[in-house]
Image 1 (cartoon, protein in one colour):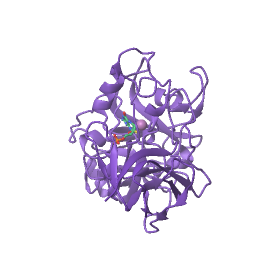
Image 2: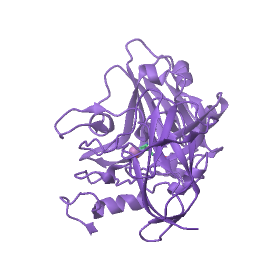
Image 3: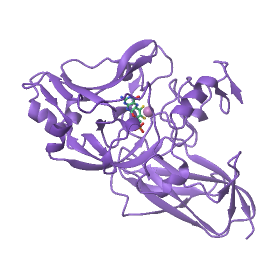
Image 4: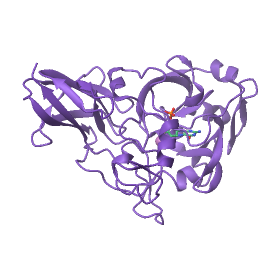
Length: 363
Ligand SMILES: Nc1nc2c(c(=O)[nH]1)N[C@H]1C(S)=C(S)[C@@H](COP(=O)(O)O)O[C@H]1N2
Ligand SMILES: [Mo]
């Protein structure tokens, strides 16, 4: 059902602003869970404002604020610095939002706001070291070129990292995605990448990195991306990705309803990830959550919090008829997916287990 009634944000009902956002910000078709690296164009997209068009000859990355030597780096400068590679699974903090009753008119993700890419660029720590961080600094603010109005506030998209994280080994300023320059929609010419953190962290179209001595209170830090029960609470900042497992859609779909038909026996497979640790186990249920069986993890891909691992499950003797498949992941930090969403006003962090209804046909 399509409605423009702002009160109508219930499960299965979508308003016109939500549909417009969904047209702009596409998800990854879940059959693309098959690839270790998400092919270009299939990675999900989330852009708050307009995609800026950047003239590379005029573009520089500034590094300023509480530093000894403010820097202004061209692309040639960045390319001349030692590069590092990170394979990163990125997921939007709003993934799963559409399953919530009473949610904000925002990007109405089902489960497809995820993708994995090989990003390469210069460690943020190396840039901060070149500029020389001064005494008293506590955070680093990443400012972008896209510009618009969010929550009534005109702004550039900006986010900060605690200084300790910015200086740690992992974050990079990425200048390539899967060995090519960044595409316009993914942040050309440079973006931040922090492995394990939800997508909003990874500021696209970077223009400036500013070291500061007060907590950054920009809109995307202090107002958006916080877990709260009511809009007047300060809430808690969103950081790392909670565990999630997803299936490659089994069998074949019906075009319009997406209902799945499976011929058994068959293998169910998919990916799982967590920003808090490696995936420790994935369990699958073929009877709507009554009984759970362990899936087999691919040890080759199960090596930490930066990117997804693959799993598979052999469904030996499915009975003809309708079945509810469910899949659940647990990470090495002890986080496990809940059966039902934990509601919050922004519609973030819904990592409730995936349920896929399939009809089994006798072969
Ligand atoms: N400058 C800028 N950076 C941004 C955003 C944005 O709107 N503007 N969206 C953020 C959000 S919410 C997500 S989930 C990721 C999405 O990155 P992608 O579009 O490359 O998949 O980018 C983040 N970085
Ligand atoms: Mo996001």
